[in-house]
Image 1: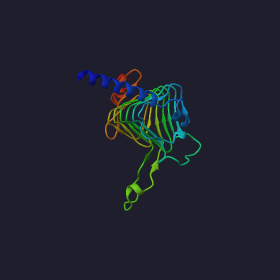
Image 2: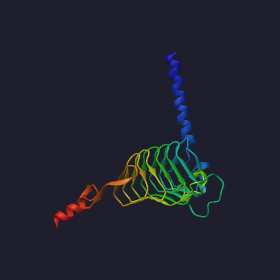
Image 3: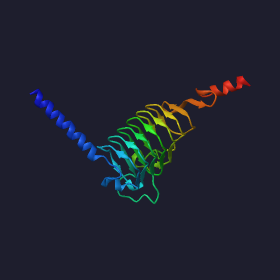
Image 4: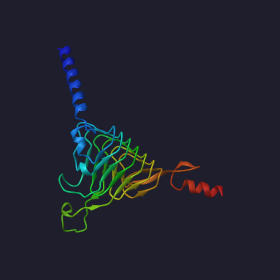
Length: 218
């Protein structure tokens, strides 16, 4: 019986590996043709998450997208969202499994950006201006998002509308980030704040430490 179970298990795993390979979305597959651009070497792993609005999505060369990643433009499939792309993911990125990238106006992710699993990035949020109208029935508000080259976003990080993260920055796992952050920042917490910076000559340091060192030196 154990030999039969082992043989059946091997067949199942081989079969699923074959399904994953065939089901991946690449520039050469029919599903890949729906995107505005899928660069050379792009692979969106099977099974994908909710993917729609492909006409407004660009993904650069050699970017890998994990299983069950949702990438969408607009609230639902079908509406015309205009002539320009909305979600732009750079080259040589790695998007962790179960992540969501939800664009309505503009999301720019630079080159060589890596994320852990279950990261959420959106440029739209609900508003609560009218205290008498259910929040879900109030028209949401958009604000562009930009993530610089070379960033790392830890597992479960949430990037909210209006966020601009400079290049070569780290977002800690579970951080909820909104606002503008300079290059070479380490951002952590809820709400996300800069907890470390890089300054030439001082290296990585807590905010304000490099200024104190420079003041002492002078």
